[in-house]
Length: 507
Image (cartoon, rainbow, N blue to C red; front, side):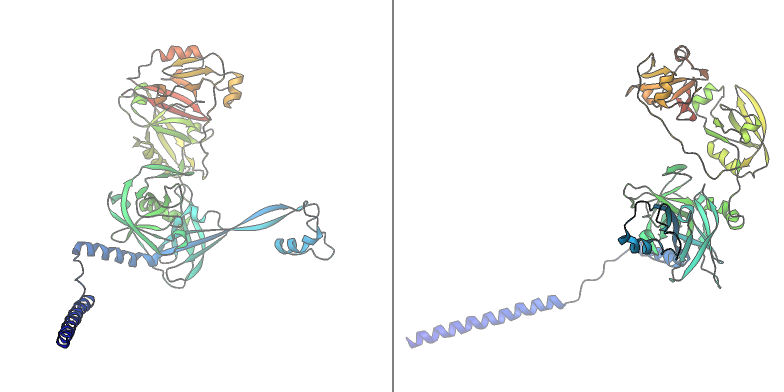
């Protein structure tokens, strides 16, 4: 029995020893894994590293020339005090509205109103373009500002003042004073940009100063209506642009400023991958005027116009679409004084052939006010030349409006899903028309019809079709019988007080 117990003890001890040795071995292996050297870093192609370094170099180069702009505007508001009579509130209102009346002075809260000042604040960005402290930014960043503070990348702040502004291009120049030269950004050539190029946007979105975002040039736009501003030749980018980026630079991979960040397309106020910048070449054209004169002096012809398309060309007797069609002539402006009329097609301005609205706009804008220019037009198939003395471009432009009203009962004419009525007193009241307006009024457009494709709107006054008057329903019926949609149709329309031409051609 004793031998049996001794053998059992030896077996147990042997098993325990094996377990201890095995456990130590496993523990050692585990510790070895815990402390062994990590694997080597992933190999990155040198081209990728080079691109990253390029972004870093651009940011380091341009950021010192990018500034944050903070604005204050003091707005006076009228506060009626006739409603406040209780004496327990005297101290509160005295403190809030600026002190008590002097001894013997009538309490200003009795029987009158008082003004108090309300301060509103704004923020944006800018870029230094001259070592003497000239900063290029957006006009809407500094518009109506009573106080401007400019903060540099080194956290130094300076008082700024607007020395030049141009609402039409939404650009402005702010000046700050300093004893020494400022860092300056290099202005590039926006005419050479290509879709797909890398770009960086630098600015102060949401007040976050010296922020850099990267993307590409997504598209180049001819023109665009953003909120209440009309912009030409905008650069579209997917580099994040948010509120506060306005006025900051859009730079290429070489660190050259190719645009001024201006707007975003967003329903929430934040970037959704579509931002816009004003091409720097547009700014270059006016910088000298902004920095020396304070504004841009542009010629003003005084016409509204649109591109001549295939339909307009056919209905005007032109061999091919060319020039621009005058939709409206501003009363007492240069064109009206020279004898130009609505419906004229401008084919030359001051010896330059005109083939697009942008071409005419540029040619007129580059002509100084007071200068005489020869304007060649086609009128009823004949060429005419007018000597026009240009005026000066007005800063404020009228906003376009549209009226859309429901139909009232009455006699109507129908064509291609379009229903029109003659102008009567009831129609004038219903559609808010001007007395004396001539034409027929669109009261209904059938959804999905051919008329629905023509771009007309309920409330439009059709004054003529293919240059044939449509003052009555009989004239309208007689005219549309001769319309061949394959040749195109030209509508002369009064839309909410704006005279326009609308075209349609069957494809």
